[in-house]
Amino acid sequence: MKKRKVDISKYFMPDLNKARKRIQESQVLKDVFYIPENIQNIGIGKTFHVRTYGCQSNLRDSENIMGILKALGYKYNDDIYTSDFVILNTCAIRENAENKVFGEIGFLKQLKVKNNNFIFGIAGCMAQEENIVDIILKKYHHVDFIMGTHNIHRLPQIIEQVIFEKDTVVDVWSKEGDVIENLPSNRVSNVKASVNVMFGCDKFCTYCIVPFTRGKIRSRKKEDIINEVNDLIKNNFKEVFLIGQNVNSYGIDFKDEKYSFANLLEDVAKTNIARVRFTTSNPWNFSEEIIQVMSKYKNIMPHVHLPIQSGDDDILKRMNRHMYIKDYLKIIYKIRELIPNCTISTDLIIGFPNETKEQFQKTLDLYNEVKFDHAYTYIYSKRDGTVAAKMEDNIPMEEKRSRLQELNLLVEKYSKEKNLSFVGKILNVLVEGKSKTNENLLFGYSEEMKVVNFEGEAKDGDIVEVRITGSSKFSLSGQKI
Ligand code: SAH
Ligand code: SF4
Ligand code: F3S
Image (tube, rainbow, N blue to C red; front, side, top):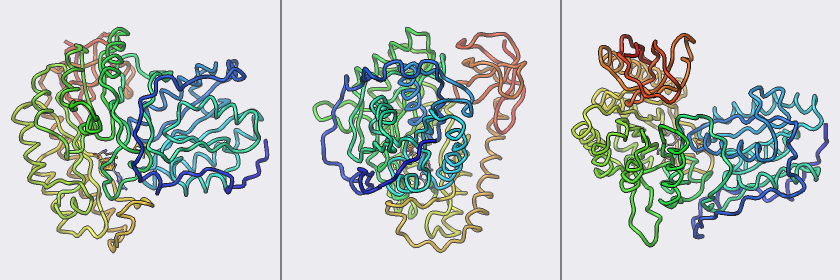
């Protein structure tokens, strides 16, 4: 195992304060990716594994990371423990997400002991946090490189440095980031594909680390997005998932043209791809126009993920969400008026600093009012560098846990009820393969974003009609017609 000396003062460390500033213009860069001659084919005969934590943006980044490693000759290995090259693509959204990664970093030290040529890298949002990089450099000497979220295209250069120099390589940029096009990509599905529409986030919700780790908002050019969708259609993909931290802010950074997410959604629907979905939508910019476009095109799926975070106006104000519950409800009612079969899910944070019992009750009230199909619920996690991290918080963790439990019971109750209401109906399902719970069944998602396990014959990528005969809080079951 290589011994490394760590002299932190020499590193250009990530800097959350710098990351907060948004000064420079972002550019669209189409030809910055290249493979240095001396590492072409460096991976031939070797294998890699990329483990991904966090959101859709990270999953898509991992597809690019895997594409780059394949371009260097490495082969994918499903088993992390026998791989010659491992990257953990990390998430910084909550402390428990970070703890999981630290556990894994420690555990993977054994691979370095077993294999002298083993290469181990940390990528993703944790790499953008200065305190995390500091801990890794001081405590985890078996990490070969730390790469941020803005410079994935530099992975070949980073590998070159790892191989030819002895020190841990830290390549993290705390600037605003650009839009990098034309990276290699190794898509994880042949049926559905994520397509980035924008990067970064400028909303600065007071609890959230994303605007620091992902930089300022940068929208991809519509032509590049539409070309990517057309290529996917040519390659037989059936569904595109338009992704970004807040897709409905798409286009607000364009200087010379007015082109919104509603316009983009319509143009993507017009490509005639079988299915279009999108995520995530901060309700702040969720325009009625988006709902109208959704209702106009059959290939835009009737499902909206619309995170509200809390049912209390005062908490929303302290979260900097720019949203009142009455306005959120107006959006919900509009969706239900124009798209009656639309399913709706949300995210909720419990135990924001000094959330009172009454304020928590308002979250339950909102839930009972909207009766969401599903919700992702989280206990508030303090993130260094954010505004909320400085807020006083006198609510004991035990109280927060019991509130979360209470809320989760409600979430389950409505998930069950909603799913039960599909029994007897016929749903269109995009087939993705064998069911994860029973290999005699196939599985796929319905238009409404419900997991459907079903009996019958079909190929991956087929869209089939399934009569729903059973339901649970997680999924539906049925028979192909
Ligand atoms: N851009 C999306 C959310 C992305 S993060 C939006 O604004 O809607 C996904 C979810 O993680 C958030 O909706 C929020 O519910 C949760 N989350 C973010 N920061 C958190 C924190 N510090 N503690 C707990 N949950 C958090
Ligand atoms: Fe975070 Fe808010 Fe941006 Fe969503 S909109 S990524 S919660 S800052
Ligand atoms: Fe996590 Fe970064 Fe996504 S913090 S949720 S991986 S943008």
